[in-house]
Image (cartoon, rainbow, N blue to C red; front, side, top):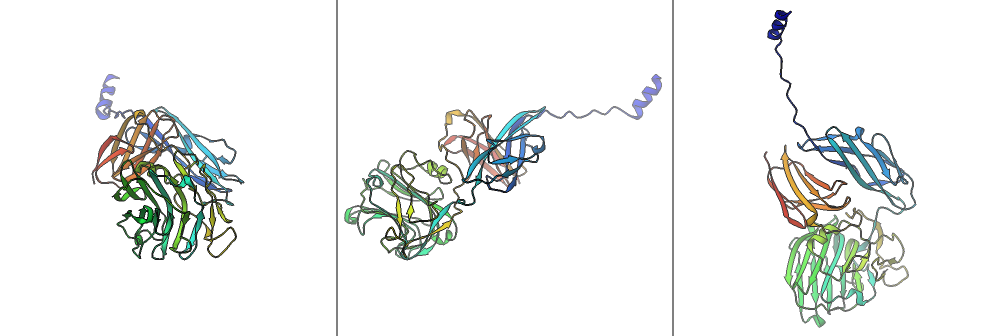
Length: 431
């Protein structure tokens, strides 16, 4: 017996089975559309990320549910079917995954769109005399700080085309222009009484780079910091030195000025603030809808009425606007159109508590750069990662974790948490 056993060991030697190093479940995410039209079905996937950098589709192994579950149902394949709704609603997809490597949860909030009222709307101006007028109000006349924002899809206009104007002819106030004297670039113009002193902040990039697509423009003035700035899509485009306290005259106009200075294109989501919004605040909120009671918000015209002669101001000051030259329909009325401006996120806090961040990690494998953040932030909070100017927003999960992924990367990358630049990690994506 012994000899046969020895012979077997010689003929069939024992082979050492490689030990697979233990991997820890690090995060869970849900992937799929953030909006579903009523009566339609959308499909979602759930991915588990492990600490070795690998990610697996675990959709069929998850416990899935919807909260509150009133406006949609979810099937075993993460297929979400939206009910018919009278108004747009929200549901949260919640996924739980458990295995020998750990347990993780994920949540994704989705919007159920009422097709009768969504998508959003905007106003289309004819480049001649179409306008919206808002009566003069002291609430729209801050003296120490100002921010003016709007989404614009431009096509042209006359030589002095107006986006937002609050200044009488050749008098004090501010104007955000699509062009000036035929120079097709965006201008932020400020002036004192009788234009005794003026500031011109001019975007160096011609409007031909923007025409036919939605872009976000923000003009900011600060007495305390002594600057006037123009931002395009959240990036600083131009800056000039300030000139002291602001002065204001006249009504507020959108798209034209008393039948002149006509803008050709669409305008959506106009906001005026009595504070100088920081770049990170502009970046964070430009893709978000607002509650309407944010600090410093003095004018908020969402353009979502979709009809009628009034554009409602949803700030606390109720500075409602009127289409055209009067309350009756006339040839100076801009047209209501559906809008696909990128205002896709719900209201949310745009500040990050840097003290609640534990650590940031960044790794790159096969051109896939992954940034992972451990925090003590609340589930649902939004954090932003910046990879050399390429920003990605991420939602904090119930475990206080958030992550962002960039694909097809090469070279060395420095990733930081926006608003908390002390948290920065470098990763080498070798080709």
